[in-house]
Amino acid sequence: MSEEEGSKKSFFKVFIEASALGINFVLCVIIGIGLGYLVDKLVGSFPTFSIIFLAAGFAAGIREIFRYLKKVHGSYGQGSNKKDK
Image (cartoon, rainbow, N blue to C red; front, top):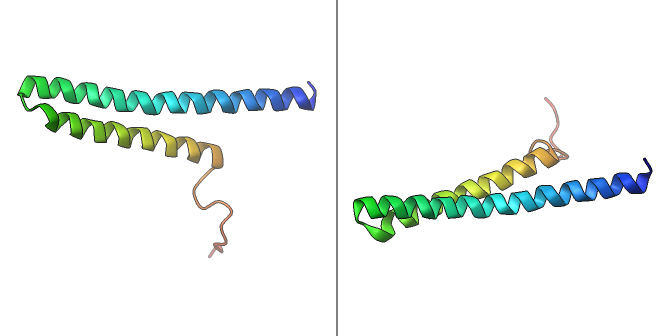
């Protein structure tokens, strides 16, 4: 395999992972809104739980983004000027 083929595979791998990350974020928000709507419908307090679960879905999506970044870039603080004690 040539270097060009390797870089193409690397590009497509990163592209697919980034696309999946975006889809994952949107699904977290949609699932949060859906669950909030269902709870609101059962309880009878429309916007309350929809907003709460929307925020929870958004937080879950952000958490997935940070997990991905941590996986890609290693642990936080890598490359910093901290000295080992």
